[in-house]
Image (tube, rainbow, N blue to C red):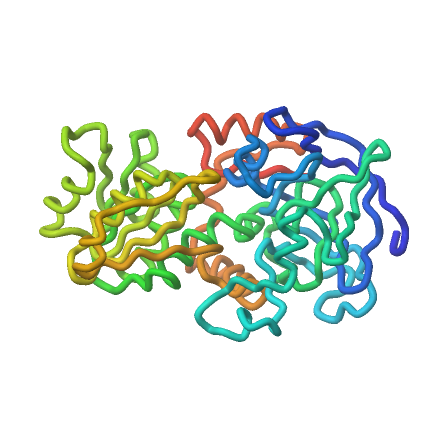
Length: 374
């Protein structure tokens, strides 16, 4: 089908706040420096639901959502040299061009090469490769994995071990990598340290895993849903607490529990009040707090400046700080060698046409990640 339009199934978000609709779409062939991928498996992430809700300021409709996927290269456009048809790949919502000043700086992973067009739901040339019922559809996060075929920029794809199970490693396209990297890259958790993780969803569990791999001696999980505590302990939490069980702010509870506060804290929810609590639970003099969760449009964070003057550090992370093209294949290798968990994040497997059920499962708080087979 190289150089031809492919007709296939995709889950289309026609408008904000409405269920996704399984439709037949047309996927145009890749242009120069683009790659067309047959998606084999994709997971559903909170960011997909956030955009679908209408709260995302960059949300464009109609759109094909999805950004935790894995598949096989079907065809490539002119000038593509890093991958070829038949390669096993993970699409990347943060690209790595290797040339912009962000890619050349070891302090960040935020490649800006195609940021403007990606934010508008378009390919780098300002157009789209998807149509349905005669209407153009927007791309999402440069990936659009809720489609049997998708087209991405060649700097937005990581070639991985072909023996890796795609219905598992698709999670390395976002949640698992984000949480794990927040601990090992952004916070740089130290052996013997004390950590607090606010929010025990998929990203929070990945943070716990990262803290454990880094050698933290005490990892405290925090969530208002006690049903998540057992799973958190399986990933390495030494104890879990529910803020609703106390009659004082959770940061005060943590300061008392840890003789002055934790060495590292992580907010994995996207709640600005919890971001403040996480910072104020960090130890005076050296505590580091990392914002991992994405807050709604227009939200602002606040704390007393004294919290920072007295030696706490407030940081943020995107995709766990991983430079994507070079790091994702290494993360797949770490999974294959059992250094990091991935299988344990998958609580449900559904067929692609059950995608709205997957969103419902996520909102229910009963599932960590649902993987859809295409």
